Length: 483
Image 1 (tube, rainbow, N blue to C red):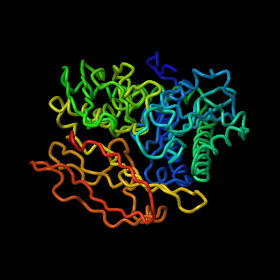
Image 2: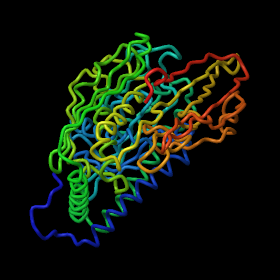
Image 3: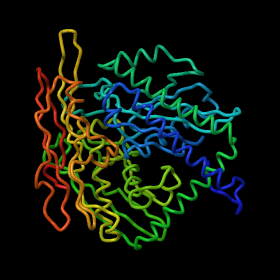
Image 4: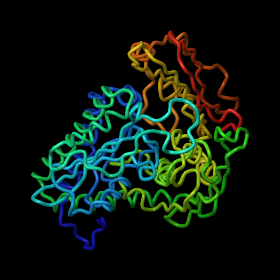
């Protein structure tokens, strides 16, 4: 749907438009709350490794409740791909569409995307959708994966519900391919409850105002968001801005740095970000799909232009264009592995800020710790084969690290990386209650932020003792190539 009004007088009044704008924000907030309260895994209800959202009949973003900012494109692109696969004529009321295709959503197979179509008066008006991280989807434990096939179950475009009836055979296939089926099926039900909440609330809105007023209101919201974003871009001096950063390596070719080079062009009220200079896809598991490359650009653009504007919608992203050839580490093609998909895109965001530091210093920050600092311990609880997964680092404990300083202000200490956005600083008791582990200490790392008129934020030092035999793996980046 092309959300632009061709007449000078909109047919829907401003009051109705504002009510609908506020309503879609409230709906996605309720979807988010319901998912957190019903999920079985801490990575959803504590780390907020998920997103929920409402989308129009073409898959454009109406409003999303972000847990992870880097999911800003994943749901929309997945819904558009589902529409291309099935066609509107083959999507019925009561269907629930499911996929975890990494090359569609841009990230690893742990992210399950459930989507329900919203019909009103026989018309497909919108979609309600959720993407959330399941801690285990099969695949090898530990080590460095070299292709997508070793990373877990792959679900193409499937209907897990058809006209309101769950597919028991497909459900059993999913259950048989995960190591923690009780938790996985709990998250399965939680995601469905979340999207059905969105469907129910949106139908209440449509019954009250009608399909036409709803779509016309979205047109106004999109245009208003676009105007604000373009006005913010106009305040940045025209020019071409470039910067480069480096990742340590891909875990396979140890010591071979991965370049991340960006080129930003500002012309009037439009911005073009060229990622052609980002390294080709790598042998290790640090790749991500093109959706994530575009997401990194849009996260940076949103921060620079309309950081507080709600709802997060596609109108506010119209002024930014992305140049991203296939086969880069953030636009990888099959069968590239993606288990640690989130690492490089964060540095893309930081490098965009770095490029624009001279153009708009009041809007950017210095580089942050830019890593999940993932550390995993896993093993078997008893002879029955029941497995435990103990996660530390940002994704497990949410302890964060230091953020770069801003103009006139020190950087934030012990704050989660930009990929993970709303992740909580999880209490140590939560880790200890769910895993055979004891947190010996967690403390601010004194003087780790660097000196300067405005210093960087402090990092975090943690020590965790695992109480039974376990395998251990850490994935920690930017130790050689500092932000």
